[in-house]
Structure formats: structure tokens, C-alpha cells
Image (cartoon, rainbow, N blue to C red; front, top):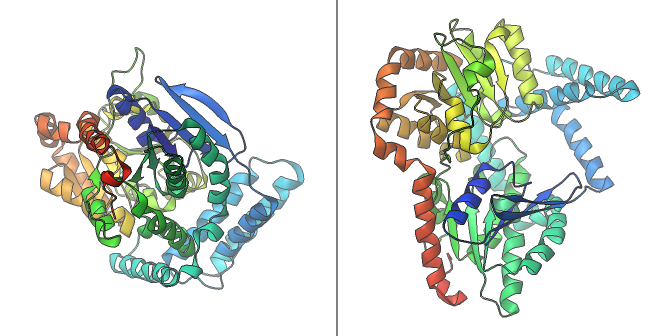
Length: 490
């Protein structure tokens, strides 16, 4: 089996879980990924071979990227919160990059970031606490209309033109797949869907009965806060190739419903949750309280995962102003411009001493790492993609035995409410998040006992349960010995 990812493999927890799970089922696995920093590498994860092909951007692509950064900021007034947030993020990125440079490069970037900040103040992109829920809904509808405009005619957002980096990736990854001659090409996320589909077609023309599996990690059409034309291009890529998959897998029941509806699939996608692997860590392993120095009697809120503007982590920082007894730890693998802006916000609010950063640990140790925190936060802002998400962090918090506080993204909010796992607050509402945190603090002991005493609940959201889903899934796929018998999903 070839697991094909549009990243370097080692940064993708879902791909790493698949490697371990498929190895345990006795399959031979090769993971194939891409590094867009130009370096190729080959190594092993477990007993599986990993091949990462390096690619580099052309001068024209780099120049186009720089111009797009400028265009994000240069508005004479910002139409909505999305545009203002994107502009603030770009200015923060310039500021953070300037700090890493020296000489004239540092001076130029510092001047650009300073000018950008002045522009934002002049044209109404000041940072403000939270958003009104009704306004956020209007913004989401406006964004959906923008995406629909580009999707109305195929020529408005052709993926090969809008996403030239994928064409370059295909030129490197395609020959690797041809040489491997896998029985199954399992594409992780949309980025390599075209590459995988084309490799399987070449294999079949050569007389091999290869299979294509597409693992949809996101609701592509509902991706938040990247340009609408780019969202449409990814959607066009998915629309072109999803029907060539022999099977489709995805990460939540609501997302399976949407994929089945949008693409008129004849078979509902199989759901494999983003549940964590769990192992006992080595001696001397430090949990988040020890890492942050927060004592056992102090409420410690943990957010674990990547940080971008769409994740709404700033809501938690704003909420600390109303939770004087609580600390927040953000567990992330990269201090990017958004993380730096969170630290600046914490300083502005006078809560910087209660905001901590902590590094990732290996995925199989995450639940133990989180387990001595008071509760886990999922602060996602509302979008079509987030509304159907059941995230890594949700399952990790649950397996760590912690109560969960989630924004009102429906898929997770429904689980938290129906299963009695914690509290729900309106997305982007810092005051609402503070109320939810206080309600969980008042009932923490009962919530922890409820989770600890329900072994069926913990198994449902475990990786062991997902491996059993994969066992049945691949057994069914293998039973169809002829590609035509595999039963395409459209």
C-alpha cells in the first residue's frame, strides 16, 4: 500500500497512525510525501519506508506569492472580519520575519511591517475581542457565495492554473508511484488526489489491478480563510477525481454525508475518526503542568494543535481576562506569526504571565502529555469545514480523561452535549468561553468520573476501534479482485 500525502509525512498525525495501523494488520506500507523546501529524503517509520520528494518554487511563483501578501493588506477599508483578520495576520508575519533577518533585509521588513500596522489603524482593521455571532454567520454566507461564483464556471478556477505547485508535485511523485507498483494507492487529503488517480490509471493500462482510495480530511468547499478562488480550485480538483476512487474514507459522519450529497456517490464514505494512538511514555516524561510550571491547584486550559486565524485561539486569550485564576497552554509545533500575535495580545491584555507555549510530543504520548491539565479547548471559528469536523484534539482530550470545552461547531458541540463531556460556547465569543470554562470548573470532578467510568465511550474514540474499521474496509476492497468489481464510488 502506498500512502500518499501532500506534506513531509512526519508532520501528519493521521498518516503516522495509518502507518502503524496498517502495519499491525500485516500490510506492507510505503508512505510517499513532498517537501516544498527542495530537499528529498528517505527513512523509516516503524518498519515502513517513507519517501519524501523535494520540490522548489519558480521565481515567478515566488514573485506572485509576494504580491498576494501585499494585496491582502492594501484595502481602502475592510469589508468584513475575514479580510481584516487576514491583513492583521500578514502584517504580523512580516514583523516576525523581520526579527529573524539582519542588515538591510531586517530594515526593509521592519519598515514594511510598521507601515502595514499604520495602514490597518487608518483603514479599520483594528483587533477586537470576539465577534457578534450574527455577523459571523453573514461573513460565512458571503464567503460561500464567493466560492460558488468561482465554481459556477470551470474556467474561473482551474486547479492546474490556480495551484501550479500541485502540477510540479505530480511531476515528482508520479514516477515514484510508478516505480513502487503498489496494489493500493491511498491518497491522504485532497492535494495528491489527482496524482494518485493518474498513477492508478497508468497501472491499469499496464495490466495491474491497482486500487485508489481517497481519504478526505476536510470539507474542501468549506475551507476557511484562504482565498475563495483557491478554495474553488481545490474543490474542482476533488470534483474531477473523486469519482475515480474505488473507495472514499473521511473523518466524521457529517462530512461523509456532505461528500455523498455533493458528488452523488453511490457508496457512503467510510468514517475513520482522528482518534489517537496511546502508549505509556518513557521514564522521565513530563506532562504539560511540569513543562509550564503551573501548580496542581491552578486551573490549566490546554489547546493542542496547529494555530491559524481560523482556529480561534485568540478567543481563549481574550477569555483569560475574565478568568483571573486560570492559565492557558498552547501546545503547538511551530511559533508562526499567529502564535506571535497571540503573545502580543496576551501582553496587551495583561495576561502574558498566564499564557504558555509547549512543544509537541510524539503522537502516541499526547494523551498522557495532556492528562494533568484541567480541561481541553477546541476554539474553532464557524465555517462549513469546521462545522463538520471531529478533530484530533477532541479525541485526544477525551482519551486523556479531560472535560472538553468546544465552540458551537455543530459536529463537536453535538457530541459534547449529548455525551455529557463538558460545555459549549458561541464561536468567537470570549465572554461565552469564560462562562463555559467556569461551568466545567464547577463540575470537573463529575465530568472526569463520567469519562473514566465509560469504557465503551473511550473505545469508540480510540485508534484501536479505527483499526478494526480499516480491517473490514481493506478486506472488502481486497475481495473485489477485478478493478471493475471494486465498485467505484460514482
